[in-house]
Structures are given as C-alpha cells and as structure tokens.
Length: 308
Image (tube, rainbow, N blue to C red):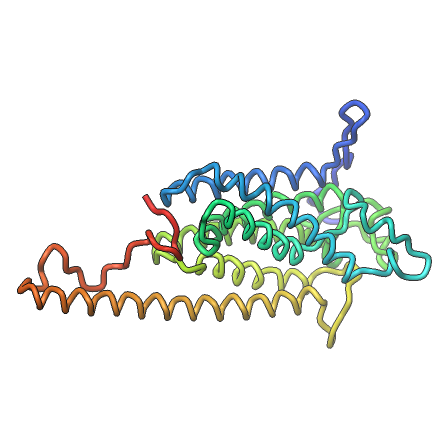
C-alpha cells in the first residue's frame, strides 16, 4: 500500500427525494455546462450570438448521448445480445456504458443540424467550441471516479487510486491501488483546451483547423492512456479497439489540419497577388493603407464565421 493515494468516493449517488442523482451523471451535466460556457464565450468573441451555442447544444447533446450508447453497445454487445444477455439493458444508459467516439460522431450530426437551423457554418462553429469540448471532457471524466471504473494497471505511485474490492479486477483483487487513468485523461484534456486556445490566438486557426488540432491532440493522449487501461476490451492485432480508433481519428485530423493550412496559405497568397495588381493599376505603392503583404485574411467568411 502506498503512503499516499487518491481515495474512492464514499458514495456514488445521492437521493433528491425519490430521485437518485448519480455522481457519474452529475459530472456529465457539469461537463456539458462547461463546454457550452466556454464555447459561448469564444463564439461571442467572433461576433456571434452566445445563445446560439446553447441552442445548437440542444441538438448536439441528445445525438451525442445516442451515439455514445450505440458505440458502446456495438463494441461491447455480449451483455446485451450474447448468451444470457438482456437486450433491454441496452437502453439503460444510467447504468453506465458510453463511448466518447460515438459521442463525438453523434454530437457532430446534432451540431450540423443545429447549425443548419441557425444558418451557421459548421467548421466555424466547430473551431469555436473545440476547447470547450476538451474542457467538458476533463470535467466529465470524473464520473469514472464516482463509478470506480476505467482505471489502469496496479501501481504504488503516490497518486495511485485506491478502489474498493468490489470494483477491482478478479485477477488482482488483492491489490488496492491502480493508475488513475480518469485523472490522466482529465489533465490531458485541460492541456488540449489550453493548446487549442493558444494556437488559435497565435496562428488564427480557421477552416476547421482548431477542431482538427483538438481531435489530434486528444487522440494522441487517448492512445497512451489506452495502453495503461486493463478493463475488458476487444483487441485487434494486440491493440485495444479504442487504441485503433484513436490512431485513425488522429490520422484524419492531421490530414485535415495540413490540407486546410495549405488552402489557407494559398488563399493568402492569392489575396496578396490580387491586392498587388490593384495597387499597381491605381498607381499606389506597396506602402499604401490598403496594401499589407502577408496580412491574414478576414475571418468574416463562410469558413470562419462571425468575428468581432
């Protein structure tokens, strides 16, 4: 037993009259609120209406919950459709069992619908809310602490997580402390949110590049965290399914980031060339007020959305 460790929660739910409030659900709700708050601030800073983010979230969140549950049921179908399984339990989201990849995919569909209804370009919206999504994940991951689930290998490090015997793997039930992978992912997501905010301010990322950076950075962290986890999972060529998913999404995000950056550079080059021809035709020199070689184009366009 290590001298210091992270304790497990004494209870996993409280009762508000006849209604139970699970710690897992509470952290998910707080995570959604954090994502909407930060996303709204960033959208308003771009000249949009803060309320639009909350309105789009009304579409994204339900679709995200459905997508998250579907991903879990499809990739872990044995308890529901295997021998002795109960198909109805596939509907019991409150019992736990959701997948972040399905949540992101379903949430993207819902956000697309919400953006269409508000006449908002999806790439611009995704860029604005990307750090908020990472912040929401950082908060929501603490739901695993309440459920005492998704931990890593046994360890005696000072920040090891002590779990109750009932929640330990059968093969290591005599070991009490494990890697707190929920904490690792929570801290990683906070770093991802900070990275995206910094990069957007430094490089004026648009055309979906902020979201692509978020996706790439998150997947890089999720891959090594998956390597630590010991909960049951499907394996392909010795690698956990979520590890493969992280690699595929990482590759797609990097491809988009590079392609969009190339298009942005070409667009700036074309804009500078056009400005130079106009200045030459009007007799203005390169020092004129309307001639700023290399100045980034305005973000008030269809790919960037409103900008104040």
